[in-house]
Length: 194
Ligand SMILES: Cc1cn([C@H]2C[C@H](O)[C@@H](COP(=O)(O)OP(=O)(O)OP(=O)(O)O)O2)c(=O)[nH]c1=O
Image (cartoon, rainbow, N blue to C red; front, side, top):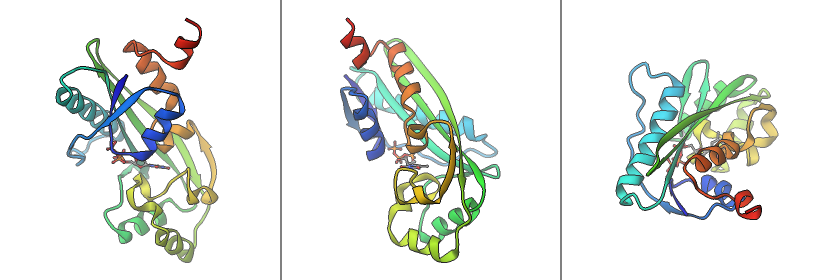
């Protein structure tokens, strides 16, 4: 059993996909980047802060997993859009280009703290203003870093991804399994072959 320090339905869905027994807990973390903070530092710092807050809050009963996903376009960190105009600005920047998606993950447990960053590249085809407006009108961009969902309607805009589909969606499953095993959390594979 672990705690997932996240409100993200995508992270719940992904963790459930690999049969990890978890309970969601809510943590309140300031997601403002530090001045000149590098993207990899930002996502790992936030993932660790979320996991640490969850661990303190849950009285250290179970390991706690935290994560943070950001889109990086031309060196600029795109978090979740604050409104439709912000979403439009992000999608206009992403159109016709390749950008990076980084997800930081952290596990805090009685055995210590582990953090890593998962790196991915996503290429968008060019988008017309009408396509961007129609996409925003679906509501999908609202709570997603970079204002799109690889797993959703935006999939028709994406020509190529390099890296981990689950990492782009919010929780890289291979890396998550590695950190959970380091924290001695039994995974389905361990249970099956015991
Ligand atoms: C790039 C991308 C992001 N996302 C989502 C994953 C995350 O939920 C969100 C990035 O914001 P985060 O701040 O990483 O996560 P969150 O606020 O949703 O949840 P919490 O902080 O409580 O853990 O964007 C997708 O669903 N699909 C995508 O293709």
